[in-house]
Image (tube, rainbow, N blue to C red):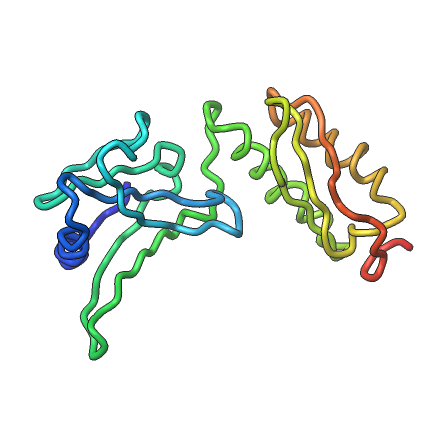
Length: 193
């Protein structure tokens, strides 16, 4: 789990004190965990804003809540504070935030992203293409967006049905299908015209 160093705890405690809110703490989470877009975040967490499934960690001057979904991606993460001539800087190093940490009970979104980034996108990259998850609808259908050489490609329907959908449905229990929301009218970078 994430480590918050003593200097970072002191800095965060001072920030929290300035909020003039009894019981305020912090919440640590990762946006788009396990993907190249992963971003580690710390936000204020006022009483009542924590989530029931968050893991709480008590520090001397404040409590931290860690988003349950982010916990595997925060392994070996360190929040630190270093003083410098401009005052100082809070840094967050989360070396596992972009690495897929998938378990059988991982959210559907994480399991889909794992297959996209580790099995499908490496194949599409040979044609300059990429596909990403936009959203999940009806609890079991992945809405995907193609980019690069896949956008406007004359073979995208075959790639979607015979490659992407087949691979995802076979490897992600609970997923029943995919939809493409890409505007394929722009054929400028298409691999196959």
